[in-house]
Amino acid sequence: MQYMNFILGIIALIILVIGLVYTIWTGKLVDARQSKYDTKINEKVDERPYLRNPIFLAYMIFIGILLFYLIYVYLTEW
Image (cartoon, rainbow, N blue to C red):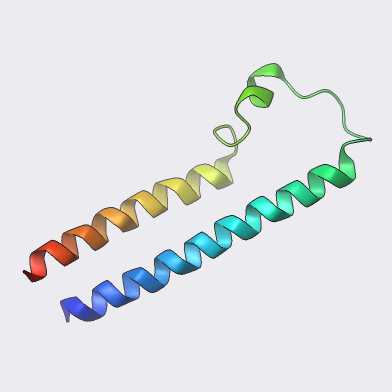
């Protein structure tokens, strides 16, 4: 059963990485389209746009938790 959890965790990690890449790609596409029409961005947000975006934070936190879980499952199988 632990082996199946490990495989499902790897599949979830792959889905998360694909979703993160797609989100970044979509963000850059929208940013390129609206760059002429947007107002000035706050300096704090402009310095660290990924750390100020809750979507990226949710992805990073969940990927960290999932990696921790996968390592735990892998080590408990031995």
